Length: 156
Image 1 (tube, rainbow, N blue to C red):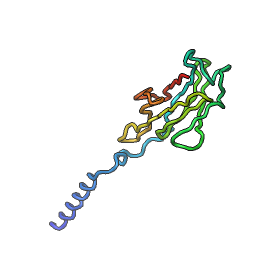
Image 2: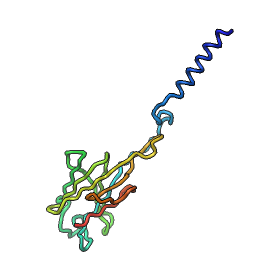
Image 3: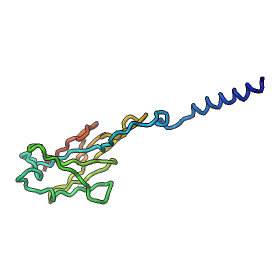
Image 4: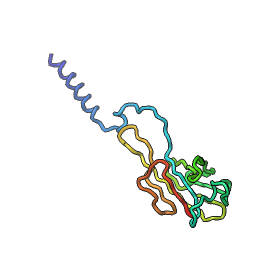
């Protein structure tokens, strides 16, 4: 009978030791629920410094969307963006940022703007998601922390 107790004690000890070993936090959380992943976005308006009038999205603006060139530190390709013109007095473009990167926005011959978007992982224990941490325009902090669709206004 004693010989049966030693292997049983050894098995219990082995299970106890192996269950206490350090492993990535998500391994003990189980599967994460499926949900649509929406990359963090920044909304941008480029306006006249004196009047606040939109410089390229409103009818009668002095510039056109084709005058805007956006590049990124993440990709060599031109950056895609969407335009929200649903409100006549609040038109903006939306830049989706993943991963953290700096965008350069150049409207015709005007001075270029550098828009730095910094992301962070929230809820690191289980099922983390990406969100905006901070946004800087020409090295000046716009927000820290930030909301999805954070509005950034560049005055020219």
